[in-house]
Image 1 (cartoon, rainbow, N blue to C red):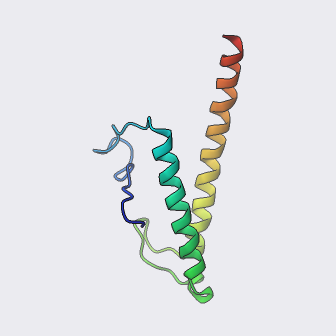
Image 2: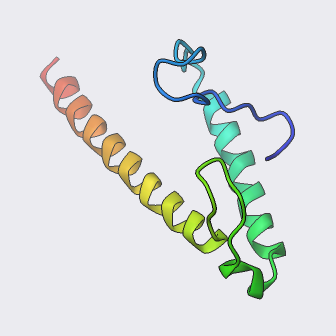
Length: 96
């Protein structure tokens, strides 16, 4: 994990960090940029034969390939949520 990045959702919903406030868009974008760059570099550095070798993770044993698949699925869910929010915000904005 990149230095300086803290998992604000560690412990799941209702955990000690669940009351975090996400009001600074630039900070969120900066965190995403650093995380994305770190992921890309880690994927480039991983030897091809290591992609199918299970490693221990907080979710249990998993291959890097499986982890990237879960990441893509999870990101897709959030993209849909963001799209829905934007759609409804645009409707409300037009009415005002």
